[in-house]
Image 1 (cartoon, helix red, strand yellow):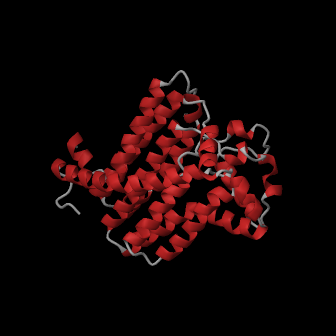
Image 2: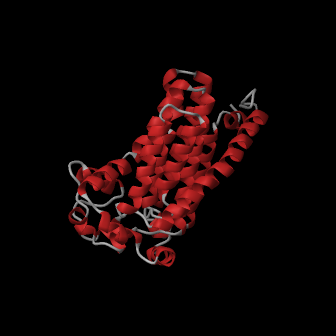
Image 3: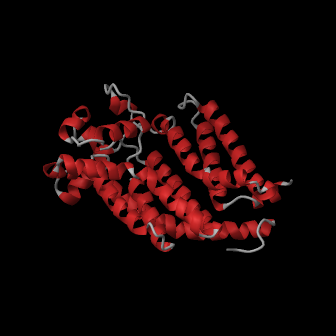
Length: 315
């Protein structure tokens, strides 16, 4: 199979994923002196590209249910993989933290630090509800994807998957541009979080899972030095808005559930001290930019696939 034919098999999500992986490879090669694991990361990213190409080929040429299913759903795994890769790259490449800039913007707009101001409304029941809502971020994509996969044309599923993956990659660029750790470290004592914002039943367990995902050890000495730099923009806000919008775009049965959970989740990002308000504003603007450019990019790539011989019809 020649290169043109192979490229013609790539879905929009495949295409943007390969482009972003190549971007990460380039960064590792440029900043190899700063990233200790650069060689391993380059090798792994190349291997992931090969896997993406294989899944695209297998889904179109072999058409087995397993390969088709893996090709549709792998993108939800790749964004997690790349998120963890950024942990090894962002701080070594851009070691400065810009929390003081973000804090200053919030103070200039509101006259106070919003997370400190919201502390007066803290209550264990409120904390419990918002911590559950914040954790539901990892479930929103599944709710959206399952209903699209079961009830809608596969092209609709592919378009939604592309928009989500593309949105993640745009937010990852922000982490490189303005690294930060968030107000739970800068404006509050992170070691006292359970005391300051206690929940009821699930809060501590959910926090522990989220902390582990951000590479915060259970022994919290020097946690600020170890936490992932993923504050600006708020990917939680950006991707939640994207999911809610897609829910209404396709008139899903779950759209009101997505709206309810998503609205609480966005509120939780500040109440639970994960983000500054300026992060949310940037996330909302980036969600708009994702749709504005993503719709055009998705149509362009499908047209390119037709010219390469992959699609008979533009959907």
